Length: 197
Image 1 (cartoon, rainbow, N blue to C red):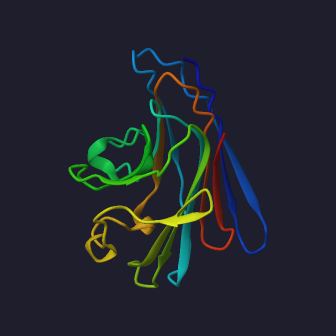
Image 2 (image 1 turned 90 degrees about the vertical axis):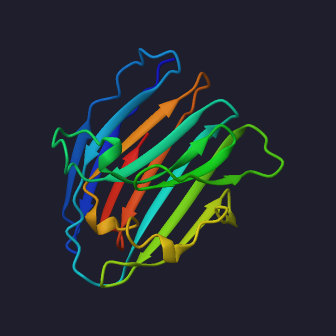
């Protein structure tokens, strides 16, 4: 399976000045499960005030494919690649379910899709951040409908749900079905946009 992934990072300030960074396409997978990944450094440079971190991911969702976005910082290996121990959050699609995995990756929250039919789906997540840097609220939306992850509680996420600490993301795709992914991440009010398509 060959997946073509292009990443553009756009930083927009109040003066509408922007910088675009092109990232090479993810290499053709050499694994049996079709796994392919790409990493991208980013920096928000936002002032300490209330703001919002938004994630939007569209894909051809099936029962056999997987698309996930991992967020964290290159603090352990400093090699430009986001490792498991450097990851604070993973959110994505996994074989019929939306998934959320916090730092440590020992816990996984699932949100199954009722009456699932394979096809295009869009996940939207919005994290409202207090001036202190702590998350105030988080919402999830699947194809226009709000949903929650089973057993997930915002009060238990303060130690790992901190977008201010993130400076590296990794998009990983797996499976035999074409995922046709399109990922957008927005930080603040049109301050930062990361687009993968």
